[in-house]
Image 1 (cartoon, rainbow, N blue to C red):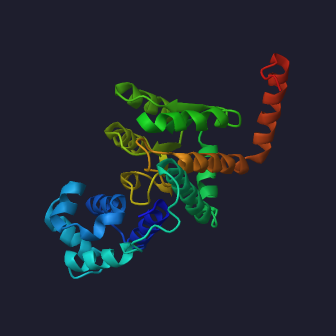
Image 2 (tube, rainbow, N blue to C red):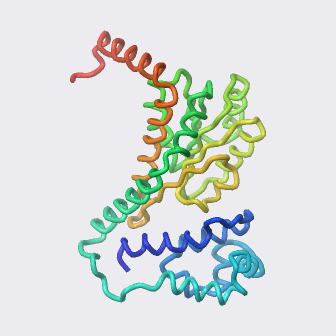
Image 3 (tube, rainbow, N blue to C red):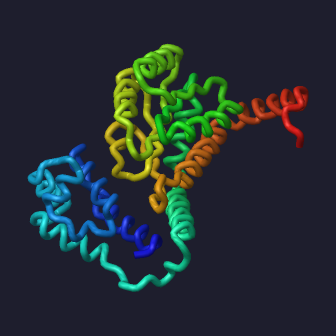
Length: 283
């Protein structure tokens, strides 16, 4: 199956969960089904349970929660959703080209989500109003946290990157809350570090509103965040591609700027004056 077909299959499987309130265990099962979308219709309940790290009865209850009589009925539905042509029309090119084309698909789906900009605008207002603004990103998400924070610091007076774990991470979260932070941007990408979720629990205990950029609407991050913004991660190469999450982070930064346009303009102009005085750039 080509990458475009895989992406379409993933979308159809995700559609099973729309409008259904899932428990944390059921979210793990749902995430497992999305991760294995191309072959999920041929997995047994025991195999799904093993992959998701849950019990087999939990898989049966999950199927019932989705409106099916049991897992066999859900599996039949999954086979219908994942069935596709046996050939590879549109699957031309080598593995590298197909991986890039899959990223184009992730960006296209992200563009579709942005047809309704209200959630992004809400997130922008929450982040703009938080002084300071902590930005959490551990392991694979650390470069994305730094990238967002680099530009956010040009328009926000106090951006704090939290990109290392351990006990110091809790210290830095607590200091941010004590200094007046009321929101946290969390970048949560696979593989999901355990410390990320520990930090999110600490942030919630400190009263912070959590905005999460993650790879899927059934990501484990949804159990910890107040506002979830999904963007697909490419899996066609040895290591994941984060093109869509990076784009979403920049869209979110635009929303932050739009939430405080006068202050944004003032800070950008001040930076340009400072940059010119110090001759920071050659052009």
